[in-house]
Each structure stands twice: as structure tokens, then as C-alpha cells.
Amino acid sequence: MMQSIEGLGENFKFLVLEVSNQLSSTREFLGAPTHELFDKIVSRDDYIDNLKNIIENKCFSTIHREKNLTKHAINQIRSAQIICVNLERIADFCVNIVRQVGYFRDPGFLNRFGYREMIDHILECLALIQPSREKADLSGALTICRSEFELDRMYKTNFDHIMAELRTGLHVEDLITALFIIRYLERIGDSLLNVGEALIFAIIGEKIKIEQFQALQQTLSKSGIDASSLAGIDFQSIWGSRSGCRISRVSAKDQPLDPAQGSIFKEGNLRKIRREKENIESWASVYPGLGPKVFSYHEDGENASMLVEFLSGCTLDEVLLTADEEVIENAWFVLRETLSDIWRSTRVEAPAPGNFMRQLRSRMDSVLQVHPGFRRRSRRMEATSILSSDELIEACVGLEAELPAPSTVFTHGDFNMNNVVYNHSKQRIHFIDLYRSMRGDVLQDVSVFLVSNFRVPVLTPEIRVRLNTMITRMHDFAAQWAGEHGDATFQARLCLALARSFYTSTRFELNHGFAEEMYLRALYLLDKILRHKGRPWESFELPLDVLYY
Image 1 (cartoon, rainbow, N blue to C red):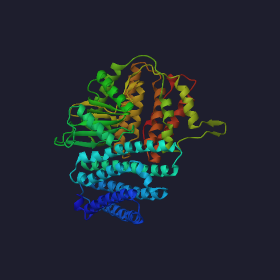
Image 2 (cartoon, rainbow, N blue to C red; image 1 turned 60 degrees about the horizontal axis):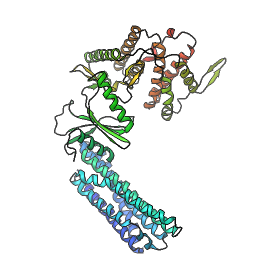
Image 3 (tube, one colour; image 1 turned 30 degrees about the vertical axis):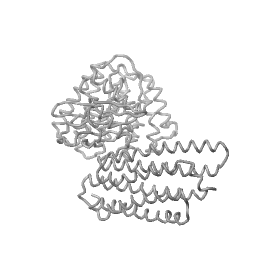
Image 4 (tube, helix red, strand yellow; image 1 turned 60 degrees about the vertical axis):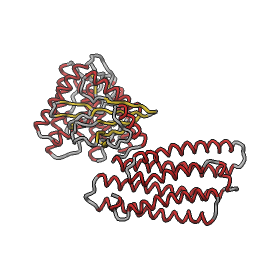
């Protein structure tokens, strides 16, 4: 692809060559500094900067101008742009290094440390860039990535040597200058890591860090798949995760386009991935087939990864937005029956303390980062005092202690519509993203589901009717369940749960007007329930119009 863009491939080769020459000249200068060589290195930096700018301009203009570029072609161009930026940065480090030499009392002082080995290793990696790109050589790309770890190791050896000599109190200025030079060489390793990851992106078509790539290899290997090269693996990012986990779909490249095939690869924080694995296993014992199967699991330091079953179907929000009425009716029927089974089979009749206000309080910082104005100040209007939002939440924390749930069920924990998968052909409901699953109040899931319908940012009348109908159905179903099981404080607890969900959902909504709607509804609900304090909670009535936009 790069060769088909006028001059891009040629300029890219020149850039790699020039940066390699710049580093070789730097190595020569450190061994025997001369004014002529210094001037050559510094002046050559401008040429490298120009080459980088030319490549960047060609990359951006091509993507903007060419309307029929394939995804692979775009990935190649994006990869080239990332690599050229990091190559130019390596050249800048070379200039910084040679400028440090002027601070030595004795330029030969640096020979006491292993800088040559570091430069030689960098040159070996630079020589791999062009062939790895031309041949889509994953092994070469990985070698470049791993150079960062090797340069870190070399830096640590030199650093310890320098620190030991500094303790003697001798040659302090020269030692500090040497440390600066060794540090610049170590920073080149960071740029090489970026180059290697950009090459992996060009080869497999997805941005993935080396740690994630290694975790994918290890996880696939544990599941019995040959992952030595990943040449036959199609790796496709399918959704983002607010928890910081990498979630991607993995399948064989030669498989037919069957949505039932493939697996889901998840990589991230050890605690979160381990918790999700445990929850998937818990769901398998509670309600087999509801969640995905775990094919393999791998832990590595503070991170973990797992390969899980890809559950075919559409998420419930996709169903509401795109399906016909018959499919929506079926989806609701299957969801209702599934929830009935889960709640009935996992219900334990024992009081459980409420936790909605504590959840709200714990997420306030995230809300205010996105919407700093969503913090009401206290004020007074004639004889009436209006609590600040902080005071209101604290008052409701105390109030919630009077409203324990009479029973608990096993909850999804993050029961948004996009975490519910409906398979129409099999008439099955599946749950995904089970990190937060736990035993708790049924209203944990009900409230999240209701607000996930409300906050869909589609305002066309036909779609809002569908969303509002789903809201009504879920509310009425949950209210009927509460009535059948003697849950007299259902409406009061739902008020707190909805306030939590409305308020915390604003941190995911950048449309300020729409976010403010949810913020104001949350305050309204909190004010309303606080005014009811002192009267029987069984008599509290939730204002249902707050559920509809």
C-alpha cells in the first residue's frame, strides 16, 4: 500500500536509513568527538524532521483524499505515521546525547560505561523495521518491542555503576553527564516499543500493547490454539470497556462469516479479570448457559487474561433500535421469563442493607470530572432551606439504613441493555460483562436497566415509544414481583436506586443538556424521598413520570 502512495514508501525507507546513520554517527562521536561530526549530526536533524513532516502530510492527505481505502490500507498508513514520529524522536535523542558531551571534563570518561552495547542493540532493532514491515513479520515486530525491556536492563546495570561511583564523591560532574547520556539511550527504548507496536498494528489490524499481545498468545495456547505467530488469527476489537479491560473478538481468518464463531479475549487488571471469571463460573452453577463459557485463563503479574465464548445474537439496545415489533415482543418475553427463573431460584429471604447512596457517593468525583457544575449548593428561599447535593446524598445515606431489602437475588450488577444479548433463532437470553455480579437487592439490576433505556440518546418519536414501552414493562414486572413477595418498601428503594443511576450515568453523557436532565431527575428523587422521612415507607409513591423522556 505504501508504495502506491506517491513517494511515501521511498521517503519511509530514507527516514529509517537516516535515523540509523544518525545513531551510528552518534556512536562514533561518543568514541572520538570532533566539531565536524557534531555539526553533521545537528544539521542532519533538520533533514530528518522534514522527512517526518513529508511522510505525515502524505499519510493524512491520503486518508482524507482517498474515499475507497480498505481498512487494511488505512491501518498501514496509520502505522507509518506512528513509526515516523517515533523515529524522529530517536533522532532528537541523538542530538541531545552529543550536546551532553561538551559537559565532560574528559570526553573519554564515558568509555567506563556500557553505552556501546546499548547503541548496537538499538541499531539492530532499527535494521528490523523495514523488513518487518515489508514482510509482515510478526517475529521482527516483537523483537523490536522487546528491545525496550533489554535497554531497561542495560540502563539499570549502568545506573548502578554510576551510583556506586557517585558515592565516592569523585568525578561528580562527569558521572551526572554520563547518567544523562545513558538515560537518553534508555528513552530510545520507549520509542522502539511504540514502533514495534505500530508494526503489530499494521500486521494484525488492531492496536494492542506488547503485554496484551503476549497475554493473548499465552491465553490462546492454554486453550489449545497454536498462537506462535497468530498469522491465522483474526483479532478484532469489538467494544470498549470503562473498567480498563481490553475486549476483543478472536477467530480463525479462514472461518466463514458466522457470528456464532470465534471467542472473546479479555485482558486487564488481575482483580477485575479474576473477579469476572469467578462470576462467570458462579452464573454457570446458578443458571447454566446464561453467561459465556471460559475456554482458558492466564495470570501474569498484576494483569490477567481469559478467552471466553462469543455469544451470538444482538444486544437488547440493538433489538430496540433496529428490530421489528414481533422480535421486540419475543425478546421481552424471553427476558422476563429468564429473570423470573433467576430471581425465583436464587432468592434468599433475609434483610440486606441498602447500598445505592454509597455507590453514588463513591462515583461523585467521576461525575464532577465530566460535569463540574453537577454539584448543587445549599441555599435558602424565605423559610425553606435547600440542601446542597452533598448534604442531600449524606442525608439519604442515613435514610437508606431504614430501608433494607427484604430479600436478595443473584444480580448481574451492571444490567445495562448492552450487557443483555438476545438470540432470536434460539429464543435465548445471555448476560455479558459480569464483573460486578453479586448477591444483592433485585432493584440493583432493575434500576440500571430502566435508566439504560432512558439514556439512549435517540429522540425520534418512534424509538422513544419503544424505549418507554420497555421501561413500563420492566417497571411493572418488577412491581408485580415485589407485590407477590411482600416487598412493601419496593417504591422507596427504587427511588433511591433510580437517583443513583440517573446521577452516575451523567459521567458517560457529554451532551450537557441530556446529562442535566438526568442530574435534575436524580436531585428531584432524592428531595422527594427525604421529604417522606418520618412517615411509613410503605406509603411512599414513586413519581413514575420521572422514568420517561
